Length: 94
Image (cartoon, rainbow, N blue to C red; front, side, top):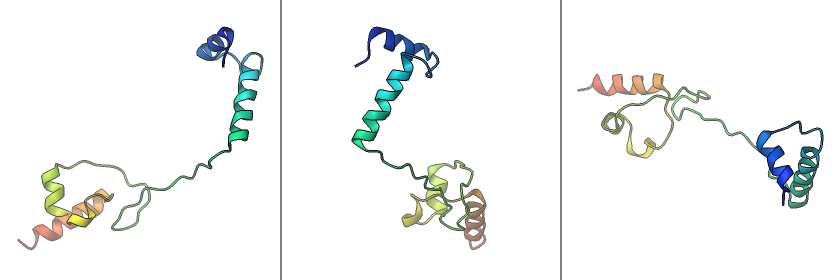
């Protein structure tokens, strides 16, 4: 539990290298170490077609997505370049 002074310090974020924030930070670190930490692992976003990492997101209407992306891939990330290639390929066969 935080005291009123500690709550005010946290709200104002006064220097955490001096009391009372230093004590709060120490208690928080002790609690984390006692409970155990879960490591942070960054999982990249990958285009499901070409494998490019961290593709820029884009939006198309649902009807367009459903027309060009096969059913089992509609919940995947597809980069704009791959989407445009898929659209050109499908449209070229109509």
